Image 1: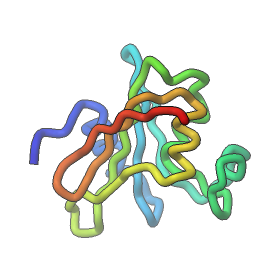
Image 2: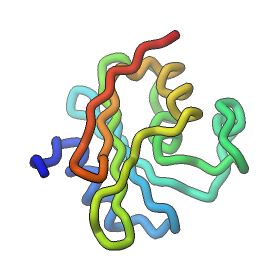
Image 3: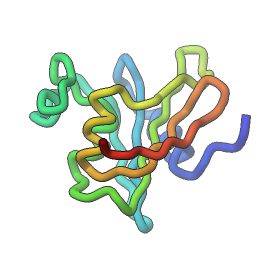
Length: 123
């Protein structure tokens, strides 16, 4: 596995402190500013706006609720399985709608074999 990019390394450190059952951590990085968020059972109005079931807050939403225009930053999403190996952390279809609405152009997320970088194009 390649060395993780800076944003995923930051997520990994924050991930170790997350107590949520389905642990996923996200970080938004722009010009030296870092916002970190985790999955949560707490609700947020944006969750239902973008179609999330039960209005649970995904890590991406937990971060992006603080971002107005994300066109100059990158979003990183990190997940580990129970055995400590990396897991697929590609944003769900509802979070992808949120990323488009917030103008996020690049998302980097863990996969089972390392990480992937994906460009996001609005439809």
